[in-house]
Every structure is written in C-alpha cells, then in structure tokens.
Image (cartoon, rainbow, N blue to C red):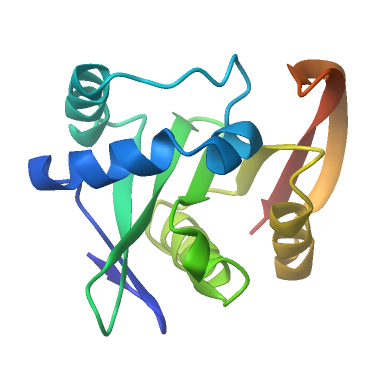
Length: 172
C-alpha cells in the first residue's frame, strides 16, 4: 500500500470490480481514456480483465485509488511496460469518480506512482500516453514536470474527429 496526502494506492480486490466497471462504462471517462472504440464493457469482461491485471507481474503493477479519510474507491492506476534493462516504465491513471476531478487526487496519485517507481524500482524514466483532448490530465502532467516527447498524429477517432496521442515522460 502506498499512502499520499489525499489517496492510498492499494491492491485490486474482487469486490472493487463492480465500481471499477461502473467507472469504465461512464462515457465521459471512456472518451478521455480509451484509445480504441469506447464501447461499454460487460461486467464479466471486466471480471476477467481485472483478474488478469490484478495479478502483479515483473512487468506490471495495478492499484486502486482510494481516498485516505473516507476510504472511497475513486479510480485506478497502473505501472505497465516495465523494461528493467533500460529502466523505463509507463503509467496510466484514471480518476473514475468525477466529483474528485480537479481537487488534487490525480496529482497525489501521480506523485505516489513516480516516487515509488524512481525510489523503489530504480527506474530512470517514466512515460505515459494521453489523448490531446484530455487537457486536465495534460496540465497535471506538465505541472508535475513531465515533458512532451512526441505526438502520434490523428491516432484516435472520437466524436467525429481525429485526435492525437501525446507521449510524455519524466526522468529521475
């Protein structure tokens, strides 16, 4: 368990899956997070998916994001594509409960992940991908010190238009 000032990152439990499923099927979340067709998932698909991702392996770690004071599950985050030789890892963060957007919960999660990755996994670089339309996330990452490394132009079709994926990173 990783504890910040606003959130705790802990393991995914089976009882978390219905709420994570609800967040994942929220259109306003789906259209900012998914790079493929944002089609609603069936609950049994999420049970299978979370059973696979919640079994942490040397190349990925998954967490739920809970508020410290209320122990309310508000989202999920991952460390993926870990390359131990090059010391690079990629992250993904989703605050699924919209009432916690813009209040520092994502920033606290980002800080916990980066601190854990740099100080405990001895990684040299953390990268991420974000849709160009997700300005709140982009601003959070830039404010934390991430830099834009590149763009995948017109990579995602969403709401009748093509969007770029921005590749961002931060170094130790």
